[in-house]
Image (cartoon, rainbow, N blue to C red):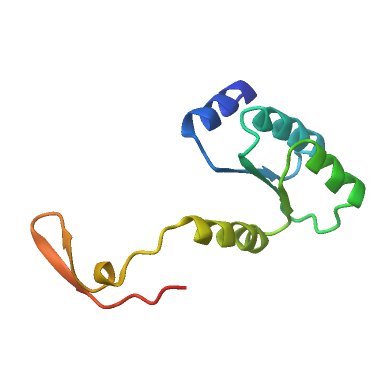
Amino acid sequence: MPLGELVAWVRKAKADVVCISVVPPSTLIHARYLCVKIRALSASLKIVVGLWGRPDLSPENAAALRDSGADEIVTSLAEAIGRLIPQAKKDVPVPSDELLSGSTPIPGGLSLPINKIPLP
């Protein structure tokens, strides 16, 4: 996808988080350029750069990515999830106990009984 279309898509999606995946033959220069363009859309947009298979990122390269707009730099999917999920849990409203017991209506007039769901 051309860069202009990608930036337009991010703007239209009104995303809270953008993850830029860097895999060979892409380079850090490509990721930095994309960070700059996406950061220009919103100062509050969280930008995560995934350097898949590159656990040896130098402090200079990490600083350059952060200077370009990256908020987080990760090298595995597990690390990315670990950095994003704690933020998501804070932003999700916790339903009341009444909503977590009884039955839940589903389309077609049926209802499914549910037990209380343990919350994190």
